Image (cartoon, rainbow, N blue to C red; front, top):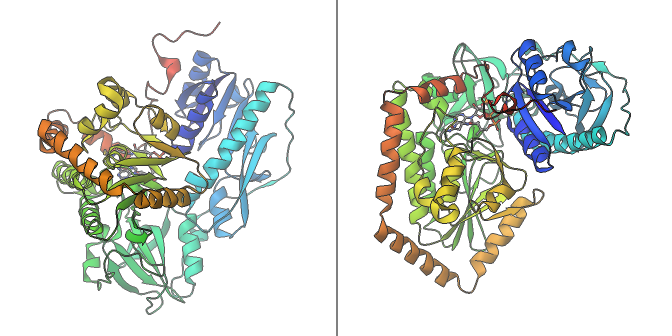
Length: 558
Ligand code: COA
């Protein structure tokens, strides 16, 4: 079928559905929801058999839904209607939730239901729920709905229900002195990603994001207890909760201590080394060990890696190489493995160009430490979505194991034509060939795990459920291999041979020369793209590589 996506943005859910439907042979084109007339124009150009709305913030115009079948992906169970569906489900502590694919009509979310899928709820952040359970359920429901549309045999039924209201900041308000940590966490989790919880820190208004539980530290309920790296700990009625990120009025989302320099006055509450703390607390970099394998997790908000985070992770990695292991697994975070340099801290810097330069050098230092590691085999276990530099940083490891279902965006061009670094010019050609490398860099579309493996970019794709267990088992097998010493020796020999042909420093210098031009040169594209990205500016047009119906050689189907 010809399927037109009408979506607010090409977010991870839209990307996943795009890949799934394209793999089934459907022809998919994308139009951002910019205005009714633009939508009407896209429909006229593409003549879709079906419109699908994976992520919409406005209603589809009647001129479209009254003439074409339009299916909406609603992040709620059948009968649930209205905005803030996930927010209410999390805040109310529901045990089960779901996704419904329903037909667009005049009343929002009240049309006949084409398919639905449910999932058990877990206490987590809204954005994380969306990227994982909601996305998986949406894939199941959309594929079933599309199959039903194609069959022509299915009659969708209306499901009675009631609409809930948009969750207001009044519903989210936290009373730190009187509410328990569990309630505070649920409220912050329900607002995470967007819009955050309106509150005050240091007597100044801000929105709070990125909450972490704290198991042992306590203080006067409501007071600020201390800080750790970039997070601030605040006491609740029965304990305390960490706040990792905040947004001040008119500003962008930033690490809490970066947004509030006053936080420097709070006592630092350091952890003792890199080992994973035995009880819940704020810990962005955590090391564990089992069966001769070291596991390094880096839970960086949104997968963004600032200069300081890259430096600390490099330090942690170097320390991990001194441990009595033969394999190190780089686990990334639970939602993202890495999305490359931290565009928000760059934007907030006094000189974004200088900060971009520092950040790319810091991430290159990390990539180089991984590449030069001779004491262990390294595995990047890509269990979360990964974009831009993060995709190439993963490739610095000896093995890359990717979870099926993860969305990869291995390209830099969407960020104002960045050239990219992280040694991609060294890492890609031997695996995918020169043309393959150029193709990956030109290809501005998302890639699935199986496609990354098919191209030779990553090594294996493992099933989604049980990924972490599978990774741990395979890593332990690698560590226990009788020829592990020979494998390590062969790796060192390969590196030395490569170094003799062309030193890593030469690859790095050539890539960074291009990046320097991106950061400091005459063309401001990167700075403009970054500004719009971090400000979440609404799109004013759909990029041509997504809106295929707007290609010059696109022919109106007969
Ligand atoms: N720096 C700072 N924030 C980043 C980031 C980065 N490199 N990459 C993603 N984010 C943030 C987004 O701003 C968004 O923030 P929110 O909390 O306000 O929602 C959040 O992560 C999720 O990103 P989003 O774009 O909604 O997720 P997605 O899964 O739909 O898309 C990407 C994933 C990777 C395609 C997209 O985030 C992207 O293009 N990121 C930029 C990558 C990049 O150019 N890095 C620099 C070059 S190395």
